[in-house]
Image 1: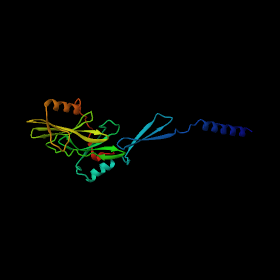
Image 2: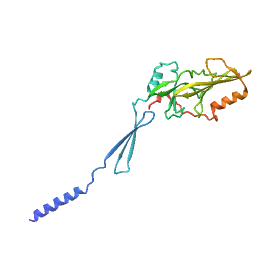
Image 3: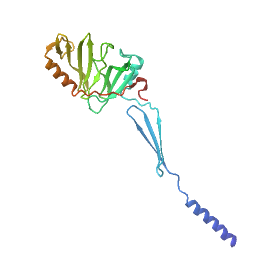
Image 4: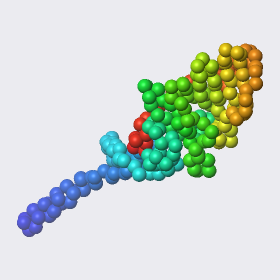
Length: 224
């Protein structure tokens, strides 16, 4: 009887000990994807304040991937572009892709891509900049892009804006020794204007003159 009682106590102690143990905390994993295609995987335990984050390379295809691949393979005339920037030029909630090449610390705009119906579309009629005579393009905060040209002292200002998801030529004004000129058709000759008209158009196109500082990154890093 004494031996049976001791055995019962041992069994009871083992049961109570087992009941005192808690199950290991569950782990949950959250996966999010950043704009440039980098996948962030976060693992956390529900019963602990422990969080670990691992950044892994992503093979996700973005709308601009085909455009970037085309530049890498040299399929376009502007294949010497070596930097890119993403910026919502027309403030429609979708970032445009700008491609440029760097020279002496300046970035010369090669071309612009915009998303239309879920596809990256290269914008036409712009940006084969002649390094040396042309200044780096300026992007103003009002959404206007200005290309400047200095032709032996004659100053040209070409202005572009987005209309219905397409980047379109707006107007060109010129300041030269003979006076001031303007055209609204890039393929036609200019017409003389007054200094007041020149200043008015320049202000209308450039707004308050605030320029966007684009975050240019090496083209080879796109999607990383």
